[in-house]
Image 1 (cartoon, rainbow, N blue to C red):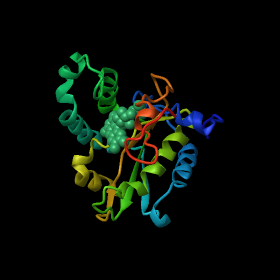
Image 2 (image 1 turned 45 degrees about the horizontal axis):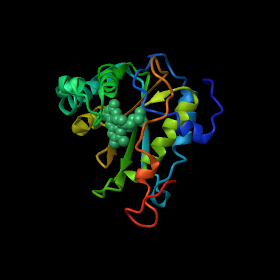
Image 3 (image 1 turned 90 degrees about the vertical axis):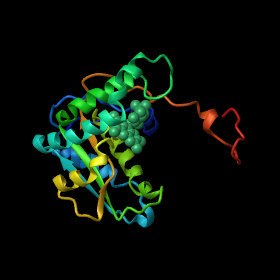
Length: 212
Ligand SMILES: Cc1cc2nc3c(=O)[nH]c(=O)nc-3n(C[C@H](O)[C@H](O)[C@H](O)COP(=O)(O)O)c2cc1C
């Protein structure tokens, strides 16, 4: 098994950004098992655990799915490349994130391991994902404790049916994300940048902000 860092839980949360520059060095299966064993400790409604966790290491399969991801990337962001790289504003993806996301789109298959979490009988409720995304965050934090970077991605999802065929996924399941895992080749375990907590915390009622 790979070496694991003893990480305080808050320290881990505050130092797990999306990591999109990844080496192709393999990850031991035992490490993947430990990471998934942490993922499945996450919550699901009624503890139904209608999930499955598809581990993809096969380069050809990854390359096939990457084509769909790249098309999704191009349609969502790639076509705006000049505009984003020349913009001066702070809004949106930003230059650095654009370049890292572009790098990931072009190198997705090089990540040694992908995990594709799938969920059964997903309904139309906007809360449908709540029965798996907590577990996915567990997965990314557990990976971080092994020094393994990850990003929650969905840009392949316009091609859900094609991806399902490649993965042999039964019709009642839906892919919920594609998470490339790998040891980082560039970047840092920096604190994810967010709006200040004071601006998004409402005390008792919406709109009642105070300094926390
Ligand atoms: C629903 C969802 C879909 C996402 N899809 C993608 C994606 O397809 N590709 C990608 O590079 N990042 C994707 N991300 C990652 C976000 O861009 C990232 O969480 C956000 O920019 C914050 O990054 P940070 O934690 O490094 O600050 C997705 C995140 C979420 C929650």
